[in-house]
Image (cartoon, rainbow, N blue to C red; front, side):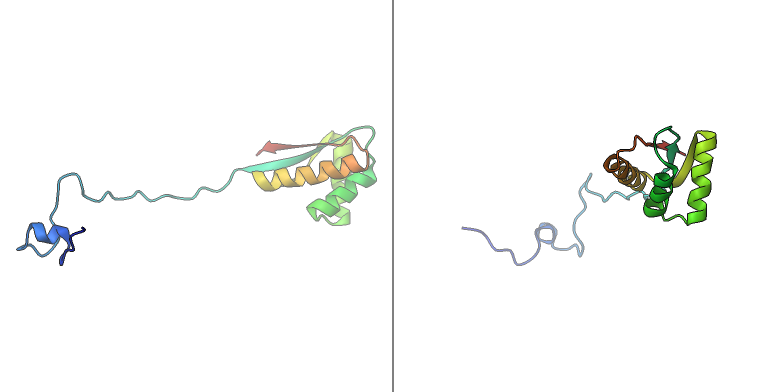
Length: 120
């Protein structure tokens, strides 16, 4: 049968003491403050190829990256002339998601578009 205590066990051990008794090694440790770090940023890079139409690249930039038509056209021309261009800079998970969206669109439309993510 269980024994019922009228006072907490620590107070019963030393009835004259008001607070709980201290035992060596049972002190509370102070926690260090944890500071949140900003997530590392990643560039989404479009690469030029001879098969993907410029119209499709503009369509992808407007649809996935919410670029204006003028901005999408300018970036598409930069990719065409320079070989590659940065569509946006995002935290890793968002960059990876946007890359997947563009590559899926390209696969459906049968374009061999190359889109990669690179650490900033």
